[in-house]
Amino acid sequence: PEAKLRQLACELFSSTCTGRCAPTTDEQGLVAAQWALAGRAWEKAGFEDRAINCFMSAVAPWVAVGFVGGRIGVGPHSRLAEAAFQAQLWLSGTHARKRSHHQAFEALSKARDILSVLDTQH
Image (cartoon, rainbow, N blue to C red; front, side):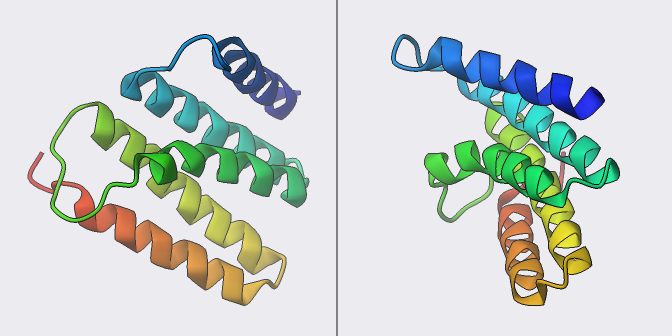
């Protein structure tokens, strides 16, 4: 039930913003974190494919930002990066449990790339 409710909340938020408004980076970070938590809940319930879909939804806003090079400090972009980083870690674990080792390593590599832009001094 927790996974289904979290996913429903994320889908509702996404549908209300489609075409009418552009969510702020802060809102995107919050929703990305909720997508990641929904994925984790699906994973714990034994629904790996649903978990993977949620983790991918959690990472999508970070990919859309297209941050390249440099470091980011504390703020909305860092929250978005942290949510995407955690989602990539959980995604990697899910792929490993499904014996999709290439995809697991790919997710770990993406997590490393996200971590490299976070300012570790905050």
